[in-house]
Image (cartoon, rainbow, N blue to C red; front, side, top):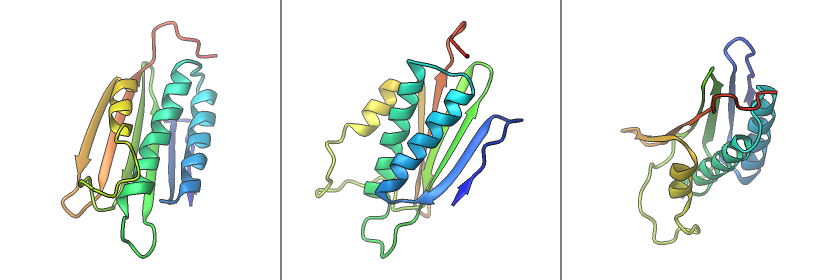
Amino acid sequence: MQRQPDAETATLRRVLPAVPSSVTAMRADVAGFVSTAGIAEPLLTDVKLVVSEAVTNAVMHAYVGAATPGEVRLEVSVRDDRLDVTVADDGCGMVPRLDSPGLGVGLPFIAHAADTLDIEHSVGGGTELRMSFLIPVGADRR
């Protein structure tokens, strides 16, 4: 496990196994980090929900059929006018699954909630979701 909030660069990095309890842990870490950075509602709720969806996707889909769960990585950076969130894994990549337990609304929800969404696939497997949120001018930064 790795947890590295860095006050100078305003970055949080977290690496956990791709298991259900990691969704809750990463969501809580992001909530604390973003709140400490002075970002309040409604952006705080959007970021927590997007992280929950992205990490859940990694837990549910990335390592299907693997003997042990791999890792899910989270990085969150706060800049003057923007919040950047990356969730990545080294799993099988995004492939269609007839046995998928989800409804298929996670990525559309993320795309709607974030200001930008980029999805990268690695040749050797794995998926990286990069999302950004604009911090409104005059937003309550506590």
